[in-house]
Image 1 (tube, helix red, strand yellow):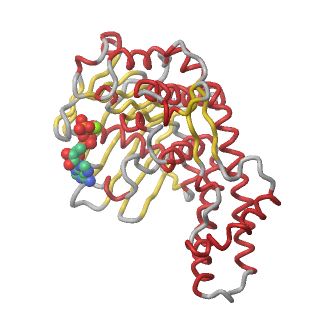
Image 2 (cartoon, rainbow, N blue to C red; image 1 turned 135 degrees about the horizontal axis):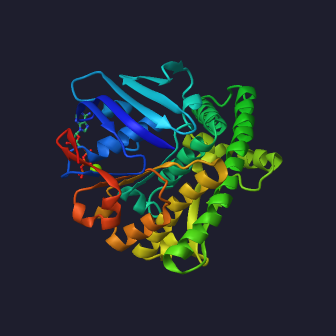
Image 3 (cartoon, protein in one colour; image 1 turned 60 degrees about the vertical axis):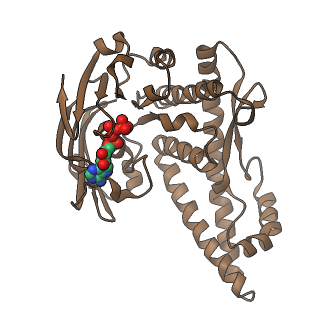
Length: 362
Ligand SMILES: Nc1ncnc2c1ncn2[C@@H]1O[C@H](COP(=O)(O)OP(=O)(O)OP(=O)(O)O)[C@@H](O)[C@H]1O
Ligand SMILES: [Mg+2]
């Protein structure tokens, strides 16, 4: 899959921009703060309708304007045009100029693997960051997952509100509350199944990738979940047991919203025992595994974005990454310094020079 062109209107520091991409390798170069990440961010938002930077949607709208538009042609089996329009608190998506009413019917069509310097901290980061990554991956695989996850979050919110009500009014009816708990368990079990299968699957690729990069074996991904291998009956019991604590704290303390996963190298948790290098190599293996899994399981080549990796990784590690990425994967690399880009990549790439919101090809 490839993005052939990109048109922006009032996106970040671009008032108007039109770019034609190389179907394979693209390098975006410029000094700090010029708008390199903004370009790859636009591609990401075109695919996922949300940015990877911050949770507020409006930040991508250019200062002092009220509507941002991203448009791009994606070539997969066919060529289709995709459009994301973001207004204050309103979002519209279109495929070939037809409105798509549900975001979950839009996401999963354009597949992206994003690798930023931030990701290198993944192992030390919060469970929330790791959950986000798996949610984005799974949403791209199945729009069913995104629907189920959205439902889970809705029920969780309702249950938490009801817990607060029970705190102030111990006599409030428990019937509705029991329905919510039941729903949360049933939907949570579905989320759990998707995640468990995915982590199992991706763990195999990670192990192989890590061995290729480091010549060392034994890297595993381990899923941590309150729901893992639990029957519905067992979960009902657990929720009953936790009820008083839930009411006191005013929130649900058990569930897949607390899920996490950990990286183990030969049975040692990398978070606690891994060196910087081992942790970085593990994340690189994960990113390569994301590409593997799109290829093997979905039969697509995702679009790969490598944002600002040169600031955190040396030449050798970057080359290691590029060596394992097949030629036919469309790749976007951002950098402040062309000297850091290998000759081979330079020769095959289209280069975009970014200078304060102006982009020159060549
Ligand atoms: N909503 C917005 N409207 C206008 N400009 C914005 C908006 N959001 C961010 N910017 C500007 O975009 C610029 C940052 O762009 P970007 O993050 O793409 O830089 P970069 O080239 O990737 O830099 P670095 O090398 O430091 O990563 C900043 O100067 C910022 O002021
Ligand atoms: Mg940047």
